[in-house]
Image (cartoon, rainbow, N blue to C red; front, side, top):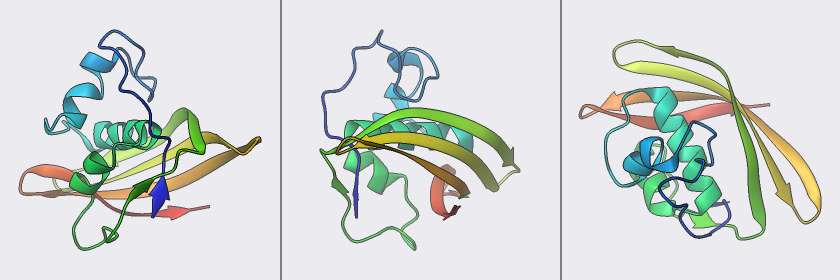
Length: 132
């Protein structure tokens, strides 16, 4: 499976690719291994990982039952924006609906997904999603 655009990690004070604030106080700690405090924050960190080509975080945050055998960064895709439509969370399960925009080979596109998450060993993980 191929995603993202491998690039350099943003500076601590740079705006996080997910749009949620400064990288150091937004997705940076989660990409470094800190547990996400909510499924929405994990979803934001996964978007940021796609944008940065951080396949290690994508693998770590994907439920082992549904994770693909290979995750590769795609240098040709540039992720350009994230919009959280809605998020519903209970103790051990959550759904986050989002729209993400991208640019590839001179063409703009949009991904709209309702992603499912569960808590596993006390940490949120991505299970799967419905794309339209």
